[in-house]
Image (tube, rainbow, N blue to C red; front, side, top):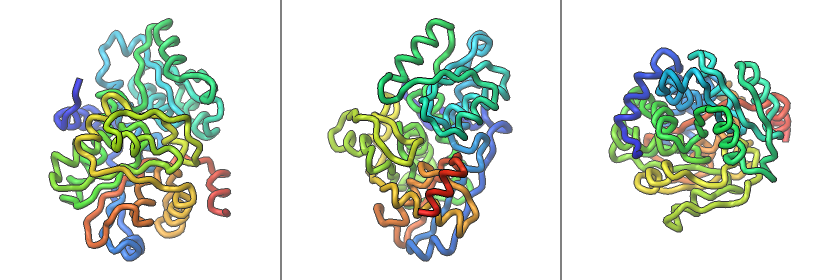
Amino acid sequence: MSVTFADVEAAAERIRGIAHRTPVLTSRTADARTGATLFFKAEPLQRAGAFKFRGACNAIAALSPEQRQRGVLAFSSGNHAQAIAYAGALQGVPTVIVMPHDAPAIKVAATRGYGAEIVTYDRYKEDREAVSRGIAEARGLSMIPPYDHPDVIAGQGTAVKELIEEVGPLDVLLVCLGGGGLLAGSCLAARALSPEVAIWGVEPEAGNDGQQSLAKGEVVRIPVPVSIADGALTTHLGQHTFPIIQREAAGIVTATDAQLVSAMRFFVERMKLVVEPTGCLAAAAAFEGAVPVQGKRVGVILSGGNVDPAALGRHLAA
């Protein structure tokens, strides 16, 4: 099943009144630093603290009554977990979440707090998709993966739809990249609403499978990367996300952990906004010049703000 902008529009209607329409923030300091006009889409202020709520909400809303009654299963390192748990609670759908045993404590606590049943696994020894499929099949649950799902992709695209509706056409759009759900959805919305925009994905330097995939022309799989960007520690793009990214993205660049920490510090100090490391990927690309933005109107997706306070303190003190 291919995903289109019409699916993004349908998702926007499904999640209207459930997901927040998050603000677009600006900063004269950021503009002066980059020589560009930057528009930050503040998804840390989304329900459950990240853009993931959009896709989760849309995917659950699209289920049949029978599927909703049986419940859903998701696997995630944190933000998708919280999003599915919260979206399920709001829509009366039971949720089971498969999480790595070393997932950030704040994300585990939030997921459990939203009423989800949590099952843990070892991300370095077990295949989360295999673990999840086994549980879903045994219990008759509908599986909603974190990125490679048409309804999830469509839901994620609503963030850029809102951004461009609010600020108008863009020259450049910067989007963080893990498995590609947000980037693929963003590509669909941006290409429809701002046809000339150059769309760039930004992934952790330690996990540049997307960059390798574009260069090779096929999905490249890598070992589990090690980075503070815990929301982007995927090993490959998806069968739904890769074709869209391959067709629409201008390219993929990377950011180092040190650059992410620098961006986190900027948002706390200058914009009074907590952005998690993964959420800083797109901004880091603008701040560090990985993508040429000078003199351009640039959309920057800040994808989430779910960082453990103790970890935030350690990062900022470094």
